[in-house]
Length: 472
Ligand SMILES: Nc1ncnc2c1ncn2[C@@H]1O[C@H](COP(=O)(O)OP(=O)(O)O[C@H]2O[C@H](CO)[C@@H](O)[C@H](O)[C@H]2O)[C@@H](O)[C@H]1O
Image 1 (tube, helix red, strand yellow):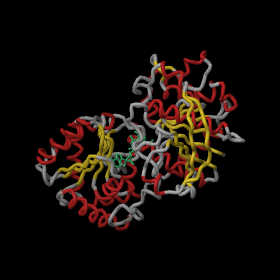
Image 2 (tube, rainbow, N blue to C red; image 1 turned 135 degrees about the horizontal axis):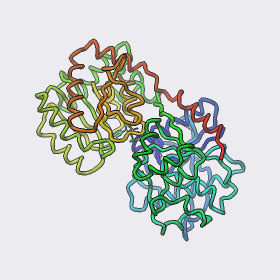
Image 3 (cartoon, rainbow, N blue to C red; image 1 turned 135 degrees about the vertical axis):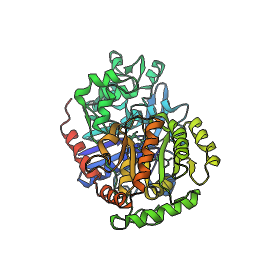
């Protein structure tokens, strides 16, 4: 099959979070099964762009509202990622340093989607499926079916995958004319809550909708930032497919970012050496357990409770534990986490920012990985941590619930708690400390976790089955 993934992120070209990881891996594993899977994404001025060779695939011209724009589709020359990667350049709109966060993001991602559709419209053939990821690609299923100019493409099957329903790309009706002229009787297929909602449009118009875990799909019906009734209504065309992880990128035995590589046989020494290094760098005491948090510092991840939870744990346990936080996000959380630093030397540190190498070093060097998420559609961090023998401490929600069991249950290997509260986190930190004191049990759990198979091989076939059964 020929599959076109449309996404705002794709690792290592551009990644802000888990979306980049998934779109950087899923097509590779689809290609390994013999399919022609490709990614098309916007162009950003990232290191990957400048460090690789590109060839021009197509130059076109399309219309957004009254504005005609030129676009160029370039392709990474050597398919280094294991699949063809195409990036779309639109002068002035897409050639920027960051992925998100500009005042004209609506225009940027709308123009990107129009360019993608226009590009495909110039092909001699049609792809078997267009797979849209999150709201940045959510208008494509609508455009294909309802924009007169692209009518030739109306029968191309589409799949919409929701990695995160918190962000929906809302735009006022004054932006409706940005879309290629469309059948005005179909406005309801764009609308939710009185505005154009690209994520809702994706759900309404795609042939099939997937979420990145089954539990998250259930949760969306009562907690989806306003789309609850839509998920209830469309439940018949929604399915959950659990993300996998790219075992070639996330492999403690072959990870170029970590100082000491290790596997199941020498996990104890490997983790100890990596921990010693990280503790030295961040001024922490390696004799105590190291609990890490890696992620976006936002409410969904319950990052706002970290400061109180860390302070309470440190006081309660009289400094017998270390915390290291890596993340960026809401300024008030960044500020709180930073200003705590001088108060807990030797026990607490934080790096504000995005640091891919440090994230790998933390998965390898930490003893525990804390994820108190209020919402977690799938979560990749807990799967990376298990692969590196790091015990996940997770709130029982979404994909965390589907991938981590509690050590108190028969055969369980993680620490689970029910509420995103300081009390639940502090209680779990106490449990972690107790486990840390039982070296034999901890090492057995590490070895067990490292053997759990979270690879893409499982889920990739589920997507192919979905594509093959698409019916409108
Ligand atoms: N400051 C930082 N420095 C370095 N690396 C950092 C970082 N902050 C985050 N990361 C990395 O970004 C990724 C985060 O992935 P997640 O899947 O856990 O969350 P995210 O909310 O971004 O993804 C959304 O999409 C994914 C994919 O579907 C779902 O798993 C998830 O639940 C959903 O919220 C990991 O690779 C992590 O290491």
